[in-house]
Image (cartoon, rainbow, N blue to C red):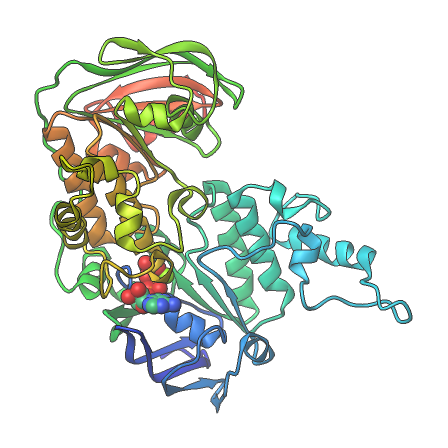
Length: 500
Ligand SMILES: Nc1ncnc2c1ncn2[C@@H]1O[C@H](COP(=O)(O)OP(=O)(O)OP(=O)(O)O)[C@@H](O)[C@H]1O
Ligand SMILES: [Mg+2]
């Protein structure tokens, strides 16, 4: 038995949202000096449970104990007083404040007489916390000017300022580079040494096995069980989460390739890409690998008309096109699934149905120029079922869905258009293992229908698993191309870091 002390116990916790029993008598515990993984499929209730612990939501029933004492968490401030802090799944920093101001928001110190915020002190204090996580950004910088990965690091530094004894991390690495993830893991090791209890949520299985000590599993809002990480393996954990085993995580089928659907020749753009050349044929999936910042997204956005090309040519089905806007790209049969779902992917105030069909309305126009609602609903329901979008109804606001389920809706939106050329950027970010496989199946279906697909992904096993060919980028250029047979993690990494 471990001599570690139980820091947190949640017993019989339930929560109902209109039409959804998000949590049904859930029990979990977390020990000091350990990382407890909280696992489960998209919509299983992980974020809801942690939002209750951190005072964002009120529980309907159940008890919470911290260091053996029952606590009554009344709100966010009250949770902080009990030593609980959370790094949210969706980032919540304010863009028009500086990093330092964000880090101490609500916890500022004031000048005695003027009651003004002590700015210098704020900056100094921020620096010490940023140093702890090896983050070198100037705390005077506006948060609006930094990228998602940096924002995530600031959220982590901010959590450290709270001096918490329980730290919740809800998918902290989805936007981080490998290097930043390593830094975060170093920080977590230090927190463990201080006896802090960490609750860690992630869909990246390898992370669970590398930093977690125990795992608590939820399924459909219910508690399934817990285990010590050293006592279980990948398959066992997956079957606890999804209630079955998953065979053939990366389904692959070679099919006969057709004509060149997309040809990119010497493409350049001010966003730091130069002389990009590649082609994708009908019935083919091209993987694009590379480190974050290598220019993969920039290539996609330039083809998609979001960035202006400063040189080079793009051909669609052999014909040169000059795409200057997203609308023109879609007209030319090109769709792009963005990696940043909150900023570019969805309209939070619209329903699932509206989000899915917003680009597709033309497809449902009947001969009287009105929308064929029956057909629209049929398609929407097909995708809800196919990729298992967890929702009480197609009319639910997308903002009320769990993170992974929002991602599924946006992917479905593009799949519905059934574009000739589909570019997907980190399509399975935040998606659970079961749904990942469904998404690969859908991409393979499109391939079998003779579409051309480009998949940009930082998940090497995913790129290796489903691509016919892999192009690797490094510092804004193509550093090499590998056939399915040649490709391996090592070969890709060599090209990604620029070793010839
Ligand atoms: N504010 C809300 N209103 C209505 N339903 C909600 C709300 N927040 C969450 N839900 C529902 O509660 C359930 C649990 O959602 P939760 O966000 O806790 O899932 P999760 O396990 O964190 O999933 P993911 O891995 O996708 O982040 C889902 O069915 C979700 O749609
Ligand atoms: Mg969540």
